[in-house]
Image 1 (tube, rainbow, N blue to C red):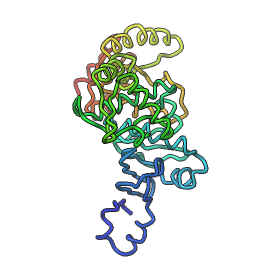
Image 2 (cartoon, rainbow, N blue to C red):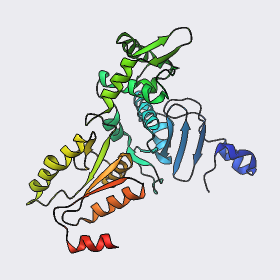
Image 3 (cartoon, rainbow, N blue to C red):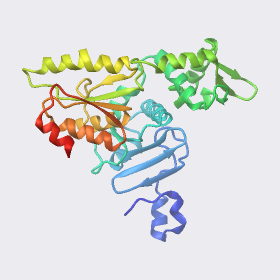
Image 4 (tube, rainbow, N blue to C red):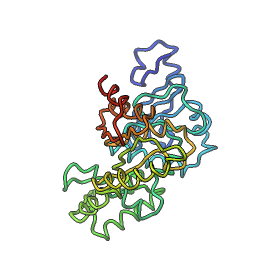
Length: 314
């Protein structure tokens, strides 16, 4: 049966209306009422005003989130914050995986195991969480003087695990004169000092939100040092000098299916560097995938061969 949204309920036959009543009414992560939910045989789609839009494999949802006996409330709050930031950044929605995998990956999503997602995207220290909260506030502001809701009422924006923690983060930002808080109407806005701090945090290679992806051959044992040198001494410095964080798929340990990681990294990247040395099929695939998404692809190669010429000619 094709997935239907809750809004389609009135036009459906009785048996469908009975079934749709069993759809989740609240977000499985933050527990706010959902704006919309949808399902197919394999995947639930959730649209939450706090967490944004995300997908979960139906078996994972039943086994991990319905009774919450295999993932705790704290991890749900962490996932909510990571998803909210991704939504603010305009990233494609995540297909969050726990144990099982969707038999058919949802188009235009980033498939991530929830532990890998938290490992890579959840700030590891309290100061990092405060900085990321400030960045969220800046990105949510359409102009320098725009007022926003206070952090205590939106823990996901603050990367906070409790209302008290969100209040502490807000108090710190106010003490540091990075935000102004208007007690009369429970609103806040960034100060000019706050905007300067936001610029410092989001420019240059230190920002995880400028993740340029490098597709390249890692090298057989005899040439691994050569390819590592190419990456570390040429490609990575050039990307970072341009103000982007540089990554390639073999740099981080993970438990996820490698192709999910690669395609997810390409979806996040503003551009891709594709090095065609040694004519690796995977590099051609990754470059083509990036082009299909409308990403800029920068080509590099140690030497142009006849095969390269034939491929570009076609």
